[in-house]
Length: 184
Image 1 (cartoon, rainbow, N blue to C red):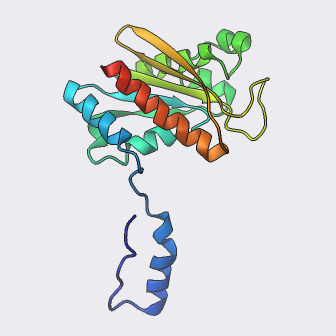
Image 2 (image 1 turned 90 degrees about the vertical axis):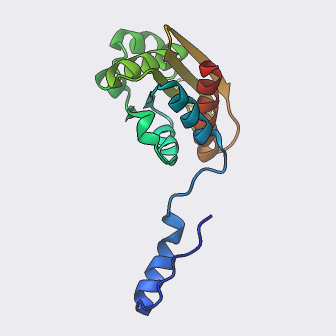
């Protein structure tokens, strides 16, 4: 955790504002997983892109906390709305109509689509239910994560415990660990 900024010589109002905003300063995650993922991708000269639904950009934001992330993070799309999964990530509308937005098929298609559209070595597709309410028969914590690259797409099904924040954070960490495992 960072120390509050010193405002020596600043007016009292400025110092108060700086202290009041200190909690908003981004910090590296407690886990070293983003650093390990970045280092592994960098060592191979590879990149990643993510299509995120339930995590709403948290995967990309977490990887971007690592200094030098621009060498490995190509980009991402937040596809919270179902129709954007087709428009931005290239998920076939027929697939969504048949399987729904929260499905292993959708996670795989998100990963494939974002990898291709962003020109990345690896694609990550994240969809699921953060809670507190069920969606399309899936309870809170049901997550599907797709990893696309090296000629294949894998999908992992998760049932994560906790509130919305815990499910979203757990999804990001698990997705990074899954990609690390695929890197070998």
